[in-house]
Length: 176
Image (cartoon, rainbow, N blue to C red; front, side, top):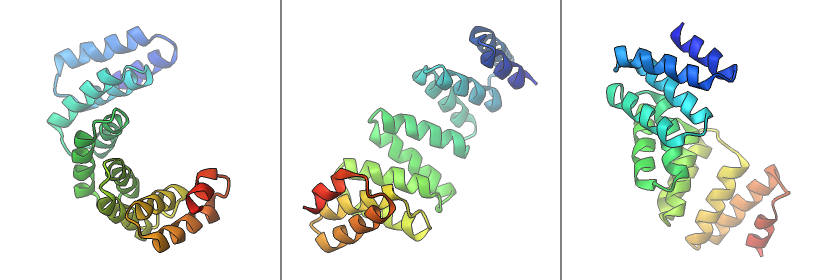
């Protein structure tokens, strides 16, 4: 009920009340991961990203296998170019669920940004094998193959990406 009350207050444009409700409850029970997560969510929705990260990290220090919180935290690190921390969290997520195709794709994107193309290819191929056959995965895989000078593989992946979305001019440029 406490979390619901805070969420209602937040959605009624009473963010200060929402944070006050959660903070008071947290002061009485500082290890309550549900309250920490709700606090992180409200901070995130308020675009207070670092406060969200703080709340979620505290929650993870208490209960380290929270998949949603691990993923949210990894995304923040990823978006802030803190790749080492994001990779560590994506690794923890994949240890919990090796079939998490979104995590595989995201980790592949970091490997690609770090020019670790072989590792990126592994993650993209794994995502494809698990059924995550999206434009983004094929396109990112093609770029990685291109960087590895595996041009036939790149062409195949670009073609697959084009079959899913032919409105991306970069693909045509890369083909050329």
